[in-house]
Image (cartoon, rainbow, N blue to C red; front, side, top):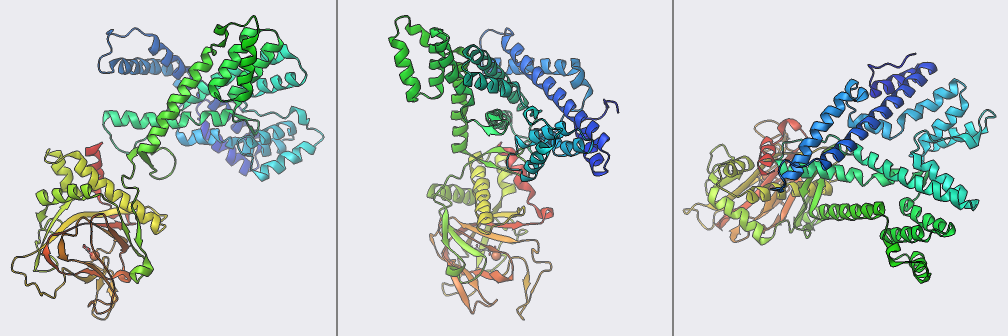
Length: 603
Ligand SMILES: O=C(O)CCC(=O)C(=O)O
Ligand SMILES: [Fe+2]
């Protein structure tokens, strides 16, 4: 049963769980304990390398005294990296183990091994350890009823001493703080002072350690530029760091929102009791950094100020408190800024793929017509996606660069001989940016607005599966000069987007229809033309019209792409009608690849 050096902590965990399932409880305990030990050694080594290397890099003299173009920042990063590489190589644990993946981290951060460990200890009649393991699991999972029952059961066993049940994962401050509280109840002021001071140091150290673990790898899922890449990774890490107090403030299952500041509260009191006025005043001044409006502490300070031996210099907050609050304030402000200016696009499982993306720019975008208004099913109209300025930007793009037949295999008049169709795809817009013909904000607007339209559609139709763009197309329709004003053809005959409708009313999901399309949307850019309404029809001849939608800037119409949504476009009699048509699919095979390329050009 020796400690297996070659196994990483994930394998140990998995072997432990399998052993449990095979009723091999000795092996279960060995493997799970091994895994916990390895994970703990690994994270400790990693934390100390990261903390030490940051300090070293901070202290090094820069290669050039003047900080040009933030080069001091990059120089430090380069020194820090060098140090990290050496540290990893020289550290026995880090050099011999494979790096822990975020998934493995999650298992151990969630105290998963204890879920099985307590059962295996129990089977081995190690009841005290079973109780402590159950307790350890309950600390981060206080609502786990099953585990609570297990702990209750263990506590009734005569072999178990309930006062000796411990949290194996407790950080040092947890018990130091508890001792401090005990001493407080016993009015042992000296001991309160010692325990609270130690607990404070331990807390701050634990927070630094926790933060260090947040500086791990981050998969952005694409290849952003230097600066966005740093911003994304840093944001990811910052969000993780801000979660550290949540873990640390959990004292064996009880959450103390103000755990850190409460140290200063106790300290000001015991220093006063111990006749150390200066330290009492410093602690009070430190406390109000966290809670500037706290009446009790304010009046304590007023009281201290009136004491004869007290000097105004006593009220300088303790340096660690001042530094902590400064950092906290800055980090909160930065996260608030990020939260208001960006939205987070969660690409699949886990928080790994969170990257900064611009917030929706038009908060007024909202539903205008639903199924009932439109006299059908799975359709809606929403208004306000674009401002007039944004429509103009896209209209200009189309006016300048849309090509006849683009997106229609070069056919200039695909749907009616009375109109010409000029289109511009995402792919060609990206190319135009690549060749410097347009500004990135034009491509950005094209991409972002359609992304947002998709999100809106997904929410409206309550789509839970991954939906992909399959085609994005900005199209303008203009009647040919010869077109008679009283023409009766459609600009776009009644059709379904994903099947071929036959005269007998059957809609066949076969080529040449775009059978993979699942949802459709059209965003309109203008209304300075005659005709051109979108028509929903019950039949393929437009005999039974269900509803008409008049285009205008920022209006979006969306519907499921099947037979239930037969639609067409009435003739454009004069002027030019421009719209962005979007199609979505559940089939990843038909994903619009050019969007990803376009994104890379922007970031
Ligand atoms: O532009 C519109 O309003 C509808 C276009 C359409 O239905 C299509 O292209 O399939
Ligand atoms: Fe259509």
